[in-house]
Image (tube, rainbow over the protein chains, first blue to last red):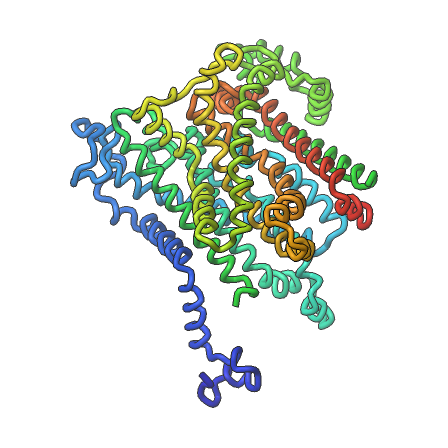
Length: 302
Length: 320
């Protein structure tokens, strides 16, 4: 474990108890072992990666064209050629579920990135400067948070018009105040730490303090929040599309597929099975991975 | 404590004011000429001008805002473009249906989540705890509309146990009403129950490790007495806050649930208003939803500041 002479990682920690005196490869091995101690979280992360691959490589995973209709194949039960059956227009449900992953991932990830891009800087500024800036930003955030997430998203889609991009923007906008609040709270406590006072004593400017000293220390909490808000955003996109306010036909989306499926529950229940199962398993995997990540990043857990 | 209350009320008033600004600006940002929407497609230019002057659409925006605000404060939210009925009247007709749905969901959620959360916390790290956690994680992840569709598929289509959708007023047919409300209430309550259970568990775990609980145990009190009399009273305080904050999710969830089960409530009204581009109705409904959320949470804060001396004191000590 000691490492070769001249290894900077080993030299730097010379004289510390052996617990912390790990070379970089040993540390990463230990990190892996700690991660693998949580099978549900690992399984969740693996399924998330699988869905991500499916979203990126949709043309390769799909067995057919997701929007090609076939009048001779209307609402056929699952067979070998169509493992998930066909829908009311004779389209292959399996291929539509695969392409739907792209829609869902796109909406879920991009909307939360938008919320982070707006919310984190705003929260940093509010928590760092306090005073009037903070008061104004927090009152706005309060008002913003008073609109129920889904109702705000529906209202925004009304203004912007229904489409995937607009649904993504609407979900991102509706998720933003949560990030402002969270970041502000984290900054308030991080700004009291000695290392921040120390960096300031060394003459660090405001921007440097926020970006170099505070942000890295609140990063893990933000990451955990992202893993729980992405599944919520994915479900929100599905709901908007289900209501007809998101992705417009014929683009495959799990929400629109379920909307159509509801009319054929008696004759073609498989149309409702697969898109719903896809949303459920993707959201569950994200939540499992997020739970694991929270425990994993918790310093008390070492 | 008076300071704390005054501060909470002042913040709520500011929030409500900002909400009206956001809603007003939002509706003005909708593309299209409201006069043309009101007049219909076959109106000529003089007809449009007439409508613009009649509704004050040519006035500067701040003037329009103040006029709208004054009317709103007097309980006048304008009239629906489609039916010409007053928005307040339409909402008043739909609201009781959604309140019934939300009330049932709340009862189901609390009935499941709080006992399960307490049990999980007390029997921490047992099989039962693991099972309860797994169920609640599934509850958070399952899209409510899919749960609804699957319930309709199995309970109504396959087993013919309950009607798939629709609504009858309680006073017209109590049994029919309850039969139709069971599934929607369960669907809406399930998501809330999942969140609530996790919070109850966390909060109870924290309380159960407090010194006074250890003291109560070491006095030789029975576990049931310690949990119910000592731990629960303090453990439930954060739950009440969460419950208040979850009201927004409940209102949003009602939109979807009413859509699936074809319940003619508040939530279906929003979707209909959006689709028919009935802007005054959208505006009124959103305003009412956001304001009631603020008021509910103000009430929650005030009510437990009355119950919990620590919050009272803290509120006056550091000014929040």
